[in-house]
Length: 126
Image 1: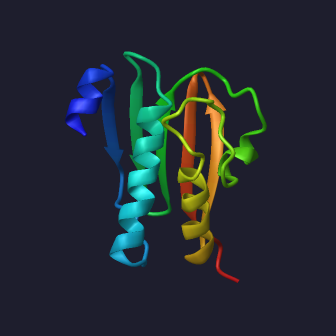
Image 2: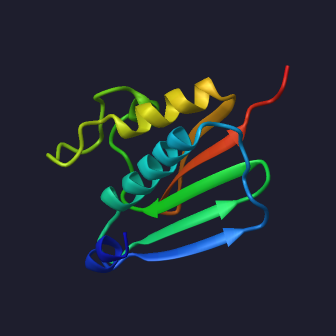
Image 3: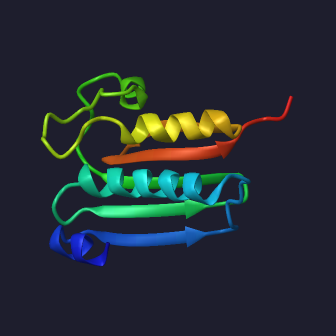
């Protein structure tokens, strides 16, 4: 994705305190990471930032951008999207949520200081 990052002039920083390790099929892990990464790139601003943060219990991907105009929970619904652009069908984060629900992960969204953050955490064991 170096070409897309370069074209949009996005800087990337990675901070790994510990690897975020979960047990799921490789194809679903790839889909999860790809959807999160594509979302951070697609919904970023020119000359923006992407930040990845990892601990043993959490993986967070943040990107710069303006505040949402709709309810953040709606981002995870199928065919719901913040942008009306033709490059998004509103499925990426719904797929992320479904994978998380199927493998005891929690997905959450936060917006602080012009940074959108989607975090995955291990769900508490019952």
